[in-house]
Image (cartoon, rainbow, N blue to C red; front, top):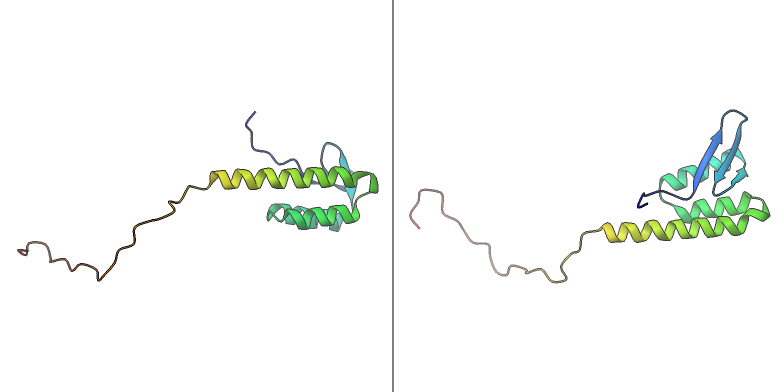
Amino acid sequence: MGKKVRNVEAVTDYADGTHFIRLHRDVVLPAAVCEAVRRHLAANRWDEAKALALEYAPADARPEIELFFTSTAQRLATEAASAQPAVPAALPVPRGPAPVLAPAGTPA
């Protein structure tokens, strides 16, 4: 538990040459589309990856693609937002000219 994983993965099975996205079942895609989905996922472009997968996947896989891509993208966005350090709303801004400091050893 607590393990950070992605629910969506683009896979190539080199044993039989099939390309697919792995959800809770494998959804077969054309090789070029699978590679494009893989590149989009690696670049965190979830909407583009989902659009390609939806366009080329069998009709019976479309609802689960929608669910998995949307929920995973939302979860990763939430995790990224919570990992950002909080920035104070108002930081003091110095006004006026910068102070001139005397060299070391010089009487002030």
